Length: 410
Ligand code: AMP
Ligand code: MG
Image (tube, rainbow, N blue to C red; front, side, top):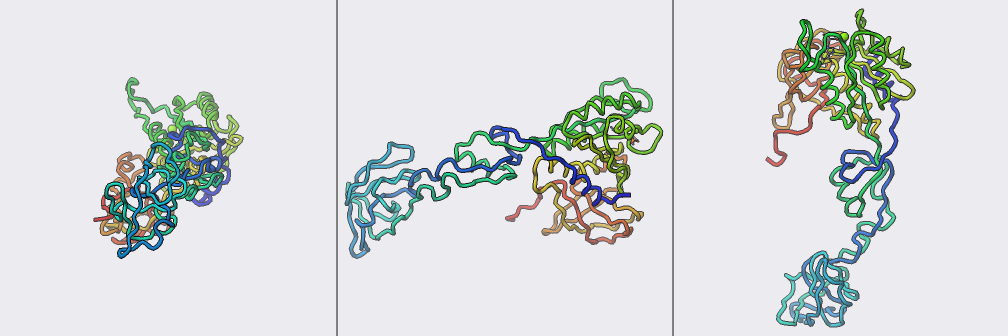
């Protein structure tokens, strides 16, 4: 049986990157750039004052000191967004405000706190250095400079940079459209007449949510029965998407028909099973370049295998250079016993104490218990050969949720 590492490697090696699409700056949030972006304008676009004060010519203030202040005549004003200022006249100081253009001929700004202004006379007690409190044109960015690289993830900071350049749309990698197909005669949706022996379909909504959480677009394919022809038809429908996730029917029961349906629809299987708990039956294949995942039907297995295999694949398709969940070392808050033989992903809650993460594994770890996947912060990675964990044991934990209840400044 394949290890998790080998299965993941096999999946990621065959994941295509999607093409580009142009989206508005608003819609670019969270996406990866499909092309580098270059500066279209110098930033700042003109020499601008960094202070409220006075624009001056340093030659007019050479030698100014407490003992021998220099006095200039106030002449004119430059304010942010105001009329473009006239060139500065020798032996005068121009009133200027933060963000306003520095008048031609001026080469320093003196903070207003450092001068005595009385009537039309302004007295300076220091000789400012050239360039003081001036943000010069192009000092942040020059036209043509690469401001964001190919593959950059767009967050609020990147939007700031793009917006400051007047950019209104960017090319990003397309978000994958992911078909989600559940199957099983025992499933029903709310509102459907109840029949003895049926249960609500929880995987459909779960996997669709997980797809969206990963940044993809979920497309729900109508549920398929345990019947080969109908299932194959649904699989074919799903293959029109960028990726297909089939959930349920992948193990070896008489009514597990997914393998047959995938084969009938032209999916070339790569592997059937992965050595892990929960989730042993797990299929991956390709229809052309379209990745197809067959997840186990047990809700816990479905969700865990999605997290482990499908999520990084979708992130990779979207060009994310960091497609994996973060793993940190945590301390077990209690003793834990389990049967050895398979690597286990145990659902755990984390509590943060003095910067340490203390994990508790929920009591109900059965693979059918949707209770065990709600309110989970991390998947603890328990090695195959270890069955006994003492309180305080250190284990790696895949973080499913960022965020902490402790203020970093407390
Ligand atoms: P299967 O993988 O089809 O053999 O299903 C394994 C278990 O998961 C069975 O108990 C199914 O009833 C259950 N199951 C399968 N699909 C779903 C689903 N979409 N929602 C909830 N439970 C499911
Ligand atoms: Mg089934």
